[in-house]
Length: 464
Image (tube, rainbow, N blue to C red):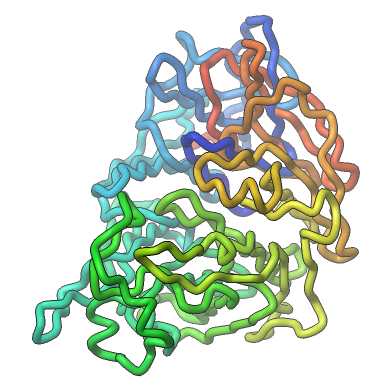
């Protein structure tokens, strides 16, 4: 798996990987720090955990067995909303901070195998993130410096580039208005590097006051324009704008061939699925992943169906079910012969998030109560996992998880054809990693973490 990220939240999220696992155990058998030969190629598993309100990084020689504790062993770190492992050199902690500016830090393993802070960062608000070359990139949509004669502010895609080698950081922005030619502002969800290109899912978000003034012909129905202010938090809107997309049943992927977002990307689009991202409030989770052969798989939960009109606001409701489509390696448009409807196979439940394991196998995190559960928003239950075999268009439910499952940690970690996911239970046992076989879907309990909660795991090399 190419990325390891972590989100603390009220919804159960998932850790997936080919050699990682989550387990729970009532015993507190202390496992000593791994003793590793002093070579640059030696690695250790690094785990992000939290206890008594404090975040830690701890190390372990294996995710398959034993117990480690943060008490007296872990390194206190910045508590990340997301964790991102990069090139086995650094792990980045990225803090969402709700609507405020983001903060972050990077950590490495020193010569003794201990996690040490390398650099700290401050950056613009973050709603999605990823990597591009030697940079960690954060993305959000916000105000630009452009206004019209009425004072309406144009929206921009705002980027922060965090340099892994120097600790330097730069900012950039491009126009988010009418990005797709339909008059709507957009945001990005996830960054996937493959085939010498960068792929990102483009999410249309309705029309701003600026957009409506500039492209009035792009308004498909005047009744969609909000007549009063409304909504709350990330869903708040102002009278005169269109708060949600007019195109919920289309997916768009921008394909960049250069090294900068300032270039003009190729846009691939399809109406076989709705927009491609996982959602939790203002956060946009990546649901586009490349298989080992370079084919890009684009997954959609089918969120357009959650756009329902009220007495105060009319919305365009989507109809597309949760599904997946494909862009072949080297292609710039969707494969017309590939489509899978997740609501016709497996448990017939829509996806919430997904991750690449290995080959053409993917780990799916599903809405356990189906579409009805998805309609509950932040109250939805997402504690069902399955393996998707993309080549054979087959879903295998994950089995072997504890019967008293309470939820998952953050991002999964994968290696050697397995995924490791952090699991919490209701019975009071400690969180643990479970190792999920990509072919059989069978989960087995592994490393137990003596902490209140676990975010994610990854592998770092010792640096001399």
